[in-house]
Image 1 (cartoon, rainbow, N blue to C red):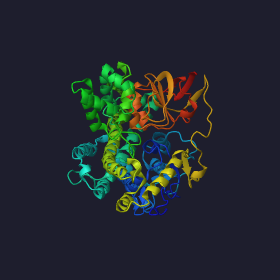
Image 2: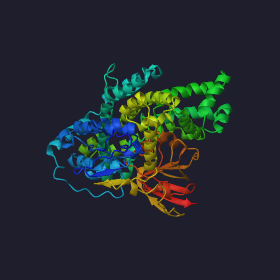
Image 3: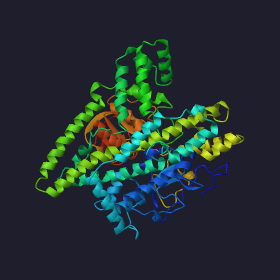
Image 4: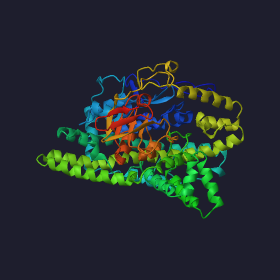
Length: 602
């Protein structure tokens, strides 16, 4: 590992490739870290000179808790689950495949399809002598048995309550000293809220998220098998739609209500018509001028929204990146699009229809299995487990994101001070330093401005490059990666098609709108087809007014699929090159049953 203490470099510390687990992919993890990872995140989450850190440790804990591995199967000195190559985060696909090989009733293809989708360039599975483990198979079997027979996640709900209490007790960071803030962040990540609640730090929360995520694949796979055996494979996704209580989709309901306030007010509408930039300040100023105006009621409701959902935003796992709390104009831009949506696009109304369809379909299939009581029982148990674990996956993710946001808010207070002293250009410069380096900078700021500038230049260079989707063995040098947009992709013409994977059933037509940044959705109008590279929860509000969703990458448990299922939107995932090949503004048809996008006219 490169010397992290060297001021002049060591920013993108490369992960040592694993001979035992050689395949890495951007699938799935690209939703969490779409951009090159910042130094502060690498330091607490991945690896530093003290050893492997919280996210990698959480991965190991989760797999051991499920029974799939023992700790001594992992390299004690290097990351094996999470790798960083050329600044980008990769997920180890080889380990997921070993889990598929060891888990009873699950296979490698199921794991690939559920978590990674279609991956261009990934080699076929080749069994390793150590992949098979009767002991691990038995342990995983016991875990899955509990999942199907007693599906419940009380510890996740307890975490949710504890984190709400944590938010209510947030310290006043403006009253803390500089070093005190940095130390608070470090201590909080390690030990969290255990001083006043039954909880722990980020490592435990992340391990719970990973465990629930992987176990969520089991009931989904069981439903898929039953539906395929009945000749009704298209019904699988309908059976897991409209559950409600999906944490990553919850902001859409609140934003919908805010959007209706704007749609019903000429005063608010005029302010939104002026554009989202600076809108939060304009709303605040208008409220101060006219305390009895409609703006005051909206601002109060928006403040409640930010308190509850302010941790969400683009790249929300990165401590230095903006969220709806730190940059409320991002949320207001999404509300601006939602106010234009017709009344029948209300998320709750769509969800109710999907829930009714799911319940009717479940009863129909269960009745069709009456002559086979064993399969009928398995089907009903899988339905019950899916209703717990699929929403549970999003709840555990939200717990992690809300947790990281507390550190983000603290770092912003310190960042603003350092801007005022001339040491930072922006509050997000915090992300270019390790926590230990921030202490050093506070003691003696000499030269650290140059270090931050150098690292920012490295980050910008990496961000301008198209990272490989799959890496096998040693990664190619970053200098050989093409610049984004440098490789010309042939645009689809009228009548041509692009094939991906079905994400959510249904067929819709609309104008394609290629949106590359969730914080700038102004081109998206009601009824348009959202075409995106990938999505995370910051994209969720854009789904509400869309008629369908298409993403470059994704799999059955990707964010785009989960939210599309909640809103009843046709969705196609793993449509490789969609953002480069589908002409913006073209009339397209999205078939969520077959995974095919057809360009109807330009």
